[in-house]
Length: 332
Image (cartoon, rainbow, N blue to C red; front, side, top):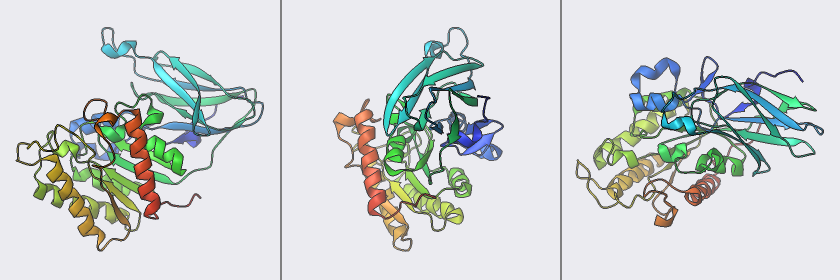
């Protein structure tokens, strides 16, 4: 088989910068903090999805990636390509980062629909793909779910990209999750709300707030007003799109410790939740999922980020909340 263009097969994409999938508008980067712009260059959550005809024995992906310099701690990390079918991983292949390389993943017999979860470090870009011994076609498009948040949404401390809570919930609900989580970010940056308002999607979830405790300290009054402004800006482009806000999950060190402005995470969480409830009185498509009850200390890998069990619990809680709110769009 000849090589196929990757675009029809890519899922979880937001914007493009040339042939690179990126997670912030490349025409609007100057208004973003440098750390968010840097994280947005990583293709978090980008996947390849395809249908293989019976008799197809493997799929090959040609890709390029940055290669860490000699002495860089990341140089020893290998790229992991994970093949999933029917909500389970059926194969994993490790490859060394390379400026240009091809990886082959063997398929189970019988054909069907498959997802390849791509490595996320060193910003790999799929250049082309092809079938071995058969044929491939793109899978039908699923409703796009825009998920914006911080490092927890980005998937930190999940052992595989496929184990992050947006990926797990997306599989369970039959959605196409677009991961807009930015490690260290999600501090109420209003330009991100404006970008999100311009991005097509059938469902939106916001999950942020923990970085408003310490990274850029906030007061309850400021956060209440910021949540209101954030949602109103999103509503300019998505006036009727179902929107779920998840308040911060458990962070033991911050729950009752005061930040530089004298606020605990408990107080900030309550301010966020009050803001959503105030807005929801006039916005029936806006829903709240309180984050505190979702995780216990045993679900945290480092006192802040969920482990795989924690990500799975977050996925179940979000999926349940979206279903209960009647927020799930129908597949095309």
